[in-house]
Amino acid sequence: MDNLPQYKINKSDDEWKSELSPEQYYVLREAGTERPFTGKYNMHFEKGVYTCGACNTELFSSDSKFDGHCGWPSFDNEIPGEKVIKKVDYSHGMERVEILCASCGGHLGHVFNDGPTETGLRYCVNSLSLNFKENK
Image (cartoon, rainbow, N blue to C red; front, side):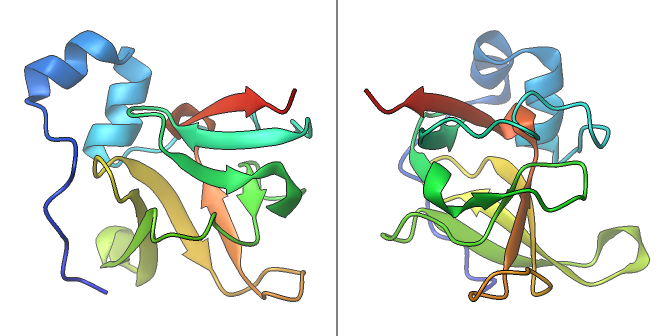
């Protein structure tokens, strides 16, 4: 889980800063988090695909989204194809599993094993880490 691959998309900090808003940069490149209940995708339930906010890799289907009552968009599964990397995170005095975009290494959030669906997972993702492509 901790063996991080070389990413398909590698950019300098200056390149990321020129492409992302300061808030997106903080979350995606510095592993920050947005305040709960403030993200535009927290209560967003349109049909489509959620993509990485940095590189647009497809990460989560709207079919896997649910209201996790946690303040951040919640999903019970990722799109198949190893698009999300899981990494043990010991920050803030606790042990959690961080999730990253496998294409660019962007910080998405964390995954927990307390989900209410049959997968038992809750991918807790920052809205700032996501874009959305509506099904047409």
